[in-house]
Each structure stands twice: as structure tokens, then as C-alpha cells.
Figure 1 (cartoon, rainbow, N blue to C red):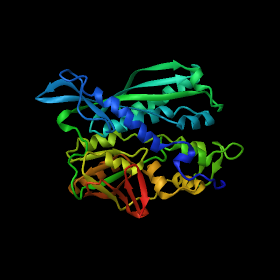
Figure 2 (figure 1 turned 120 degrees about the vertical axis):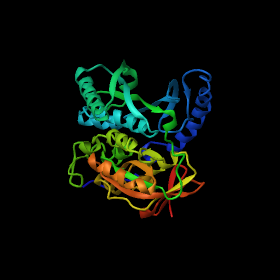
Figure 3 (figure 1 turned 60 degrees about the horizontal axis):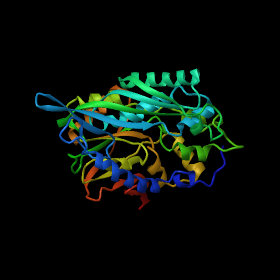
Figure 4 (figure 1 turned 30 degrees about the vertical axis):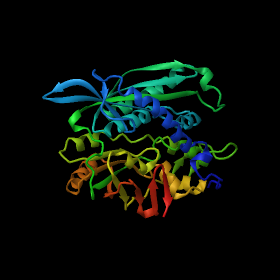
Length: 372
């Protein structure tokens, strides 16, 4: 058993999401201006900043339907630090692929390719081989190619933390394709549409800073510590790869079901539902039992339900919003792909765009949940 610690939220662990939100205002102030730089030319963005992926009009017309290029970028985050502690790097590439292609899916696009950026303190062949294996395995699961990338040697930036293992960072940028008249951003959501949740594999690649602060301590439990609640070591649990949802979701998109929104449940948890372009609210009235890692983090870190649901996916890694008549088809496809799926809630008419998690008595507004 681990001793309980005085960790209560993400900010105490060192991640200031409120300051990040303020910083994003300044970022958007400048980047929003670039959306018009291609006006009148090929390459005009179809949407504003804020969706999981944006779509670029590349000017190709097919039977009067334009072709769009979906694009998204993401990294693996501090999951890398756990890999360094375990000296195990062969699954991080899967996480890099997953975090990007799952976002591409959220606009209804089919992922095509990803290029990676690998920053290293030194180009150790074994490290690069293991990371490359993970990229290969993730690309195979997502049915995409990795046609290129970049390796940068930046020891001055990476050798300051004093952690064991080799120092590096990994990120990627993915593209996909979508007909412009089939882009899905949630604009068609109405009252009483159904929210279907797809099971996550665990923590995925979000909230690792908080998890490490709670579970791993200098002079105490480390990544190699076995926890009976998990049935394996802390490091093995935290390195469980992020689920790649491409195959089931692409079949859903091609099934004829009226999919109104696709949501990758990452940081901010179910608050990601509000990234849909709809004046709607979201009521979660059923949640399956989450993986043990979440209760372990919550218990040992003295973390509230509100904070847990703000930071983690809590067992649901992806959501699909459809009308009630299409629920059976979505559940059938998920089952055929061995993905556990559940009807977890419904939508409401709500201009304030709140997210209610009834089993926990939580109401989400803005970037936080509050206890009712």
C-alpha cells in the first residue's frame, strides 16, 4: 500500500491549467489572424481554432464536392518520464500516433499519415529503434503511414532534470482527408441525442504529471513498485498505450449512421464534449466502473471527484453522439472491433453548454467541474 499524500489537484502537482487558459487567449489573438492569409488561394482553413483538428480546403473538386485536409498535432507529454524510469520506450510511438489520429477522427476525417519530431540529448540507436517500433505498431493499428519526420539533438534543453534513462521528447503531426460537405463538428446536435462512450485502456496520455506526483516519490515507491490494486507495477500501468479508435470509428462513419459529433476524451475529461459546435448541454447519467488506476490516484492523492473528472478520461476515451435510432448500429460496430461501448448519456437544449455527471453529482462549466 502507498501512503496517502497531500496532493489535491493538478495545480499542486505543477500544472497550472488556469494560467494556460489565459495564455491561450494571447496565442489565439495572433494565430486567428493567420486564418485569412490564404484567402483566395488553395489552403484556406474551413474552421476556426479550437476543434480537435482543423480542415484545410485544398481546392480539389470531385463531383462538386471539395476535398479537405484535416490536420492536428500532439505529443506524448510526461508519459516519457515514466518510460525513462522504466527504461522502456517501445510503446510511446503508439501513444504519439493515438493522440493525433484520434483527434483527426473528431472532424469525421480518415487519418492518412503522421510525421514525428524526436528531440534527443544524444542519438542512441537502441532508444530510436524502440520509439520507431512503437510508431510502426501505432501506424499499423491506425492504418496510416509515417512518411518522414525529424530528429534533433538538443542536449542543452534536455539534460537538466536529473532523471534516470535517456532524455528525449516526442511529438507528431497527423493529416487526414474529408469531403468538405461531410465535416462533423457537432453543429447538428439537438435535444435527446444519445452519447455513446468507448472504453479507454486506462490513463492514456493525460494527467501523467499528477499521477507521478501521487504514486512515485523519491525515497519511496517508484515506477517498479508492484501495486496489488493494479495487478502490476506502477510503471507498467502508466505506460499502457492509448487506445487507437480509427478502425471502429471509420466503420461507424461509413455505416450510414447519422453521427453528429465525435469527441476524444483527453485532458479536461468530459468537458471536451463542449468542443462540439452546438448550443447544447450534456448529461452523463451512467458510467461503467473505471479502471483501478483512477481510484488509486484519487485515494492516494486525496483528489476530489471534480478534479479527477477534469483531468482524466475516467474509463471512457472517446464519445460518439447520434440520434437514438442509430445507437444499435454504433454499439454493434464497437462490439465487432472488441471495443467495449456504453450508452452513457444524452444531450439537452442548453445555451450555457453545461456538462452534468449525475452519478457523481457534478456540473461542468467552462474548464471546471463543481459539486452540486
